[in-house]
Length: 297
Length: 168
Image (cartoon, rainbow over all chains, first blue to last red; front, side, top):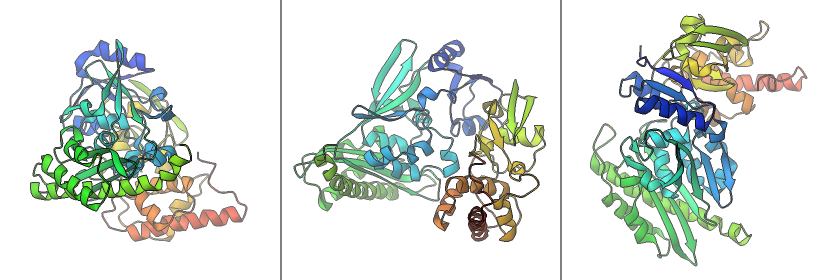
């Protein structure tokens, strides 16, 4: 029977209460939301917090919607909520693509967006999706809020910019009128971590790529991104050849490790092929949304 | 610490350790052994119960997190001595062999039908994709859920009142 080691349990009533609890209990306390990463780690003694601070009651962190020219995703938004939201699907199909292949429907009822990002697993899908759309993480601490670009949020495996005593409260994603996005993953079986996965967002302007965002996960891409491939694409006409070359660059720049999910060469091949595919799909969706833009979106 | 959890409509107050998992709270503290304890790693779905009307894997939820919340287990599916349509479907369509995955499968199926009264086979398979039947009896599980959907549609048409709305 797998049971976590003993710990104290506190239930936060508000964000400020959660911060006060973090302050009171110090670095051996951990925030818990969905718990689908933390509890398995606690059962295996890979994590052994002395105090768990439950933030599931903080409705203020469950906000999901458009505010001004941004999509705001509260840290406590469940995977299922992100997947079910039509506004998210309209502006950022990349998130719906990704959520369909994250864990399974029952786990998605419980797991949260903020928890996934803070877990900072090197194979996490949402980390690549948020990197592709260049989100901003909003972190709250005792001295107020600060913002961190998502590509500076992950400092390494299981390590983020969230300091002890701080809480990730939401993600802000700039709306890019007329942009298209997509995500694709290769997994061994339903609900598994990816062998490799890629996400992309493209904004086209005057027949050329004005902005490209590419996210990669499970293949050792620094900050879950592919800046070399993005740079190559910017200013070019979209097309099969350009997308294949971007895939080649992204595959070359990443640093996959061999494990039970496959050897390095296979993962590198997947990285390139998946980048090519998501760029193609993102471009198609961007073309499909060109009418939106003319309609004054 | 002391918690009060409403299980199948009845409040239970118990003193528990914070590290107690919901599945063990149900089985060992409340003697509701219909919820099965399987893989312990949120993979198999044998332990699925409803938490506030939404299916969750109870091996990966702490009992203390359910303080003040509502849980429904397989024991809470029947009403007034009558089996739920999903339970009847599993009986009619041979939806179980060894029965180990069955409570979790039925609770997820109940939730699916509450949200989509007429799911096609693909939707059913996707919804139960986080639950394993080691007998590999998926064909009949899908048939059982389809049977339940048809049964409820028939009852609704006959004016007996659909199950929807009684569980929100």
